[in-house]
Image 1 (spheres, rainbow, N blue to C red):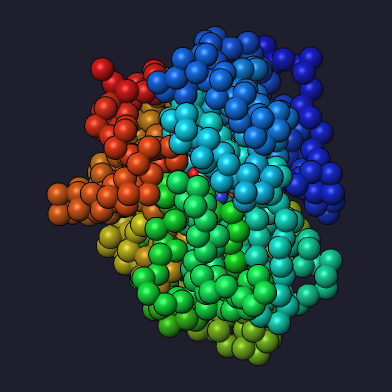
Image 2 (image 1 turned 180 degrees about the vertical axis):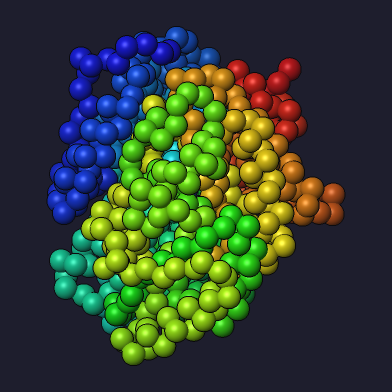
Length: 606
Ligand code: ADP
């Protein structure tokens, strides 16, 4: 599937938020246009190519069964809301967010694809689709926006499943409560949309957003994504959900289970998370137990803030940096979820190509990184710590004094404020993200390779020098073995850090894709042997990761399967998501593990 760029099919202009639910706010028009031009100019793959294989059908259905089922669904929710996925696939780019397949395909592009996309317009229509799926035994896979890049995008785990794209017609901000500092959103509300709405209303409130602002507030939270303000743990800051269960019934969690007077919602739905009895919200995150159609979130009050960074001189300083950070984070001196990044990330966030710094194949050498970093604003260094302190000027000054003192023993440490670096330096982007302003800056590193796609390897790492070093060493050794540059970012809390290693590959290069898979398989296995596991992973690694949480002869998985079978006896809802397979699929060759590196066909093994 490689070849000349298909220049006849020009990329679509990026729609604005005023034109499309998933568009960009007008303040980012120029950034979006620059990002798109750069990405498209670094592309050798055609925008689309004719399909090599027939369109996928749901497993177990004949063409005529499927066509009867589609007719049935079209009658129930409108023909225009059911679209068969039989056209050439387009990877597009972040803002086009295809809902037909995994745009960052690490296997053949046509492998992780759906048979059709369905657009429900209300909770009632979601219930209709669920009942339809039960009737025809068709797996359905809900997405909110489908920009879950690096983790499988919009693709269903079972090829030929039907994608339920909730965002297109269910994207209302149902409530923003300025007094309670909370909101209630539908699946298609992006960080961009929520942020702009709060600005338009002139409320002195912040949202928390991840590095890229085009994702779904609800989708990111139920996939347990993180951001960078003091409310960076998105699931921990949700309050109340409405869920369609796999049998079509409707459930409200938290105080939402109390009906309000005269058919209204409970006035405390967004005020108290725990309600009464078992707290069940958690089982609807990273699972396939329900479809979330509404979700409440707490918002922050805006506050003065000061972003900064520290640079460290030596790669070997890593465990000492971690040791210095731990007490700061545990005592709450660090106001947010700060990041520790290796200096190589300073190179790729410039948006420049790897070929600017390095000739030929293979990863960059440390010497090349050093030489290139010398020319950049922070200079030749090893690790960069990006933090933000919150509060009035005096308080921030005092907090910064404590942080500086903690790092002062590490020789060669330098402290930088935004005014010390040029306007286009990454530190200015952190000022925005760390105060809840959603942007697009993080797209820049996708220019590193032509046709770049990426996978995240994301183990939970103790905030303890010795263990962090052990995990880092494994990641470095694995990347070296499989020939990839190492891009580590650590999102730091007091007791653990989300280590996010970003494996960037060229989608036109089958060998690179194979090596990326082999690297991830091996890292998951290596970390598990030391008792470490991932917080989140790409669809194709979810079985393997889930099985590493196998204490007590897979007690956790057996518990999850018990819930799955009780709630979803027909196994229609996102089979295989997070490694949880319903009875109908379980043990029939769908599960993928360490040995599955050459994944030519995703389906039951004979
Ligand atoms: P984002 O665009 O914010 O990254 P996605 O819409 O891609 O988020 O959602 C991330 C993952 O969470 C999806 O792959 C899907 O498995 C799951 N998911 C998303 N929205 C829902 C929902 N409303 N109900 C249940 N699961 C969902």
